[in-house]
Length: 298
Image (cartoon, rainbow, N blue to C red; front, top):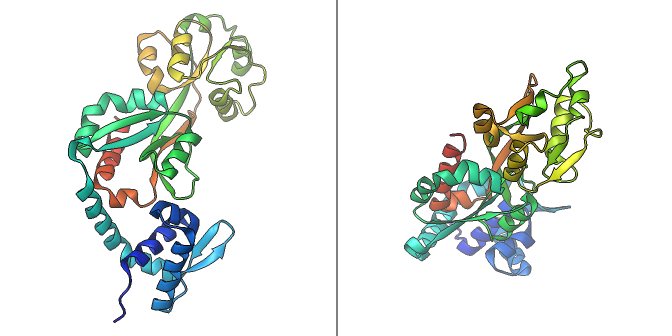
């Protein structure tokens, strides 16, 4: 029976998951020629073709799919054991990135449960989704809460939470609507508090609900944090579109009112992203991800 170099199998599995020799070499800390040599030696040893060249990297053959299924769990188990052996106990930390609003409102109130689940410190980083996903890809972050479906090589996203959007304002603004015109036309009389100059969330709401662009709206204030948008709207600065989890307490108390209730509320799926294979290899990361999935909807 032929024996196979463990490092060659590990390189093969990393290339298989990353879809690129270059990316696999970076993840493994070896040169690209070394990674290529590992794969070529394994192919010669097995007498199989494992990868075909593709425009964006390499494409696994059906034989590679079978080999990955066979050796993946065993390589992951060995890597998990090696990882655990190097952990410095309570000083270990897992880095979680995401939008400040979602993390602050939905997850940080559950910090004791999150840290207990993984048995390590939790480091939080706020930022824009593209920057956070790139930091995840390069290893600077371990998990990312993403407001878009990740399309980054070597990163896998799992649906986490469907956030519902609601059009809100202080109660005084609703009384100023004349009530004799289409609602989207009447709403143009109310100034907008927006997250950014291009009205990203409001634009999505208008297209989804009113099937047109919000070109007739006038912006009163730009606040690059939805918690700040909420504060300005509560103060009477105008209307905005907010995730329901940020507005629900104010709606219940009467500090905010919904200006429009569509038959189907606009939704956006939030994803939990990790480097491909990391949740299988790292039991602490897996425990944290499970806790986040459980708590995000609570």
